Image (cartoon, rainbow, N blue to C red; front, top):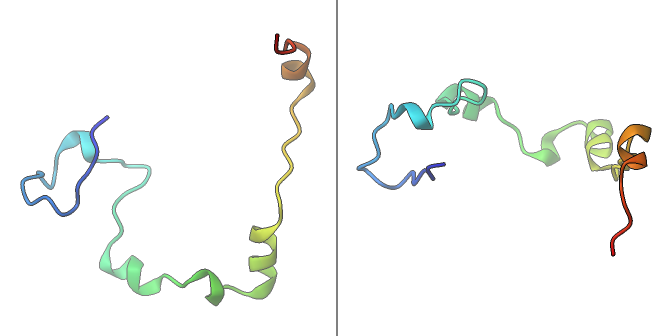
Amino acid sequence: MKSLNLHNSEVAAHDPELIDDDNPEWTDEMFARAVPFSGLPQDLQDLLSEEKHVVPDAESSSTRQPAA
């Protein structure tokens, strides 16, 4: 996978390998609408800051073997 150096003027702007339709580059409008985390409502900050606990499903945990 190619790495993108945004400060390299030699990188083609429309290199097909650098285009990601699921995550396009931000536009000036997107940057203008963006807010910092501290600008979000407190209840949303709290929700996003909660520690996440991942519980493996029964199928994947039954096939695991103890480390030797």
